[in-house]
Each structure stands twice: as C-alpha cells, then as structure tokens.
Amino acid sequence: MSKNRDEESLVDIYNAGTDIIIFTGRVDKQDFQSNREKLNATLYSIQVIGESTKRLSTEFRQTNSHIL
Image (cartoon, rainbow, N blue to C red; front, top):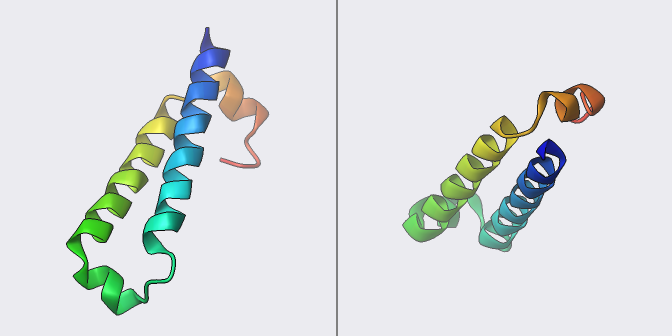
C-alpha cells in the first residue's frame, strides 16, 4: 500500500517541478515577481512538493536518504 502512495507522491513532485519550470521559463526575475499569476502558480507548486514529500513512507525515506 505505501509503495503505491510513494509512487503517487513522486509523480506529484515531478509534475509540480515540471510546472515550475514551465511557469518560470523565459521570464526574468522582475517580470516573474510582477506577474501574480505566475508567482502564485509557482508558489502553489512548491506547496504541492512540500505536501507530497510529507506523504512519502518512512521506508522510502530511509532507502533514499541521499535524495531527501
């Protein structure tokens, strides 16, 4: 059961990271900071990553401590 949950969490992390790259690509810092839509979308994706990492099992964390 936890393996499936770990896989779902990893997919969520990957998708959120991909979204961040899309949202921030080809935008300089000033334009990014002044674009509330991009800023909020990026912050949401960061939140998704944080919440998804919390769902990873203890076993996954111990086995993959080099990436966490």
